[in-house]
Length: 251
Image (cartoon, rainbow, N blue to C red; front, side, top):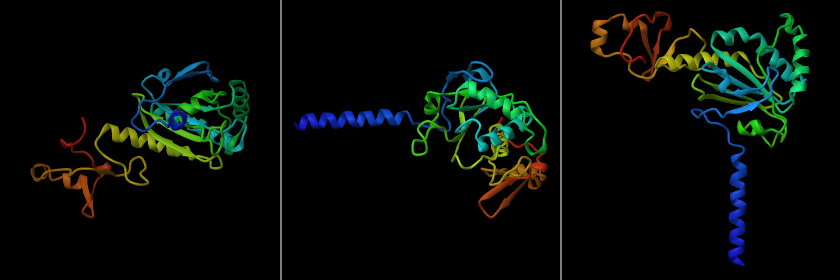
């Protein structure tokens, strides 16, 4: 009897682990999970079909809802900004593609914030069975078992997850923040710097190393204008004055 009870406990625990696996959220630094689905732009395989572009995958709770509508319209008005950054956007929910198509047409007729109407170029992905939403950890059961929360995955040109964000259904997202995050990620990928709190494109950046040696400073005195220290722990680079190359930058 004890042996039987032990076996039952093991089975229950194993089932629990298997179920928990369905809820695993792709972590920063991991490969973006691949999936194929129908969209308002035809069938796609994500992220492969977007090539070597950066990608942002947004999830939202439901079509034709006010907060989600405002978010998609703001995204549409940022399409040119994302294009400049080499970013492809995709949006997913558990609604089907027929409803997506009707919602898209409705949104494209709206003059939101008196900015005029705008075409939505990015695909709206259907996920009526929730498989992809589970794959990306976008269904949070304490909130809903069949409606996504507001998730955001920023994926780089190598299909590596670089940023993960989740928001409650009641709170609309600041879409400009994702422009800022991509700008910061692309900058820190291109050179060995970090971005401080509230950083905006063009602001000074943190240098996570001593930026020059005594010999380098003697050879290039203008380095003291390029870099400055705050306290005794934080080195910053004066971006506007960054004209001198030093060996500690990334290639």
